[in-house]
Structure formats: structure tokens, C-alpha cells
Amino acid sequence: MLITQNIFLSPSELEDYMGNLIKKCIKFCYNHCSFKYGFITRFYKITKINYNKIDFNGINIIFNVTMEIDNFLPKINEIYEFPIIIKKYNDGIFLQLYGKMDIFVPTDGLPDSNQHLLKNNRVNQIKIIHLRWNHTQYDAIGAIIN
Image 1 (cartoon, rainbow, N blue to C red):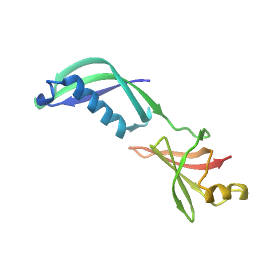
Image 2 (image 1 turned 45 degrees about the vertical axis):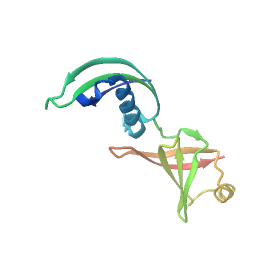
Image 3 (image 1 turned 180 degrees about the vertical axis):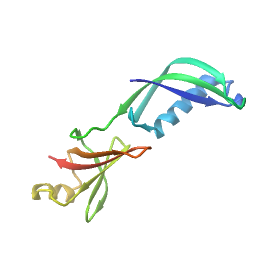
């Protein structure tokens, strides 16, 4: 997938501007989640520098770049494979998908056949049943499917 983003470089970063743009794109992708694209799971490359300009303070240079990435946009009723159990509580467990998204799975109402999965730290599939965007990332409640 291609996305476009503004990346800021200081004048001292211009000598190796391409290397510094790549570093900042990787950092942006590592921490970024948006409503439109979801979680960015991998940065591949900068495909194009669309333009650059000096910011309104005259301090930094803004590079508008198009980059190739992989993303994970969660959806209700989608089934995902091999989440990692990260925390167990009496009321449920937290699973993590792709190292990015935490999903709470309440233990209430789980069939007895799924209870052994919680004890053995093994979950093959999870289905997202509720999803909420909270302005910085997605929060989800899921159900274990095996």
C-alpha cells in the first residue's frame, strides 16, 4: 500500500537527507496508527518525494513523501490467526496481533472447550466482535475461535 506523509528534517540532517528521511519514515511507521490505514506493520521504501518546502517558522524542511508500507486495518467479524497471549486476568485475557493491537477477550460466556486454551497459552484464531477508534489507536473485544 502507498501512503503520503510529511516528514520534517532539520538543516543539519540535509547532508544525508535520504538516509535521514528513511530513518524518520521507519520511526513514523513503528509508532503510527490511523483511522484510515490502521496499524502500519512494515515500511518498505520511499517511492517518491513529492515536494519539499521550508516550514512556516523557517527552521525545518518539510518533505512530502510517498512510501510503500504494509498495514493492518482491523474489522469487526474478521478472524485473525495466531495472536499472542500477553496478559491473563480473572475476567479475561489480552491478546496481541502483529505486535501492534491488543484485544481483550472476556472469559465470561466462553464455552468450556475454550477454557483449556487459556490454561495452555495456546490460541489459534480470534474474531473481533467489538471495535472502537479512540483517536490514537483501535481498541477491540474479541472471541476465541478454535
